[in-house]
Length: 191
Image (cartoon, rainbow, N blue to C red; front, top):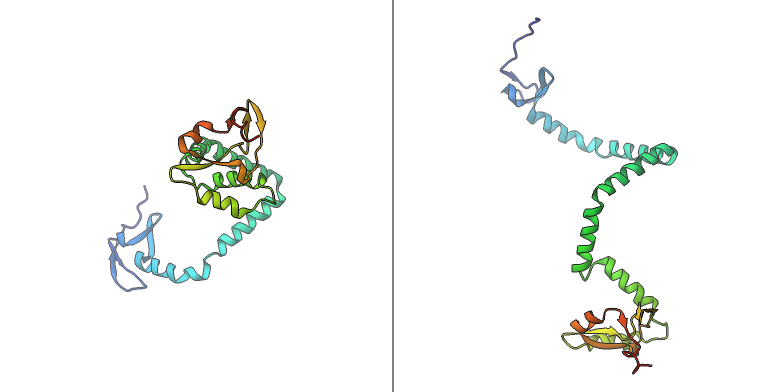
């Protein structure tokens, strides 16, 4: 068995000129770095502005070019993304459902609602009238569409309009019970 030199217990850092213990130097295989940890960190901080972003920019460009030109690489990336998504799909969907249920200001819910309201509002309707109806809504009540924007009348699909004469005030519980289902008897006074 070949014996090497005994490991030293301390050495002088060539940068700061202070004798420090072996534990104050980074390990490099069986030996240690020539500068102490503090001097190495200071040197890295000083060099950082010169190199920051260069390597990541190079890597990003390399990936973009490879993705654009290599079909096999694109397929591999798609499989990786699908595997990651499949692993988390249940958690993601549960979080989406929870947010949809509990957050009235959820962007997805607001977009979904505004899309239907926009498509069901004729261009000739005065927006000021609609806003006045919503503004005068009594406390504990909600503005409800008599004929739902997307609903059922006796099991048949129906699409009402977002116009002042199709709006009414209902209590929260009555509005929840009604949902988007009505009967012809419910709207006989409107027709």
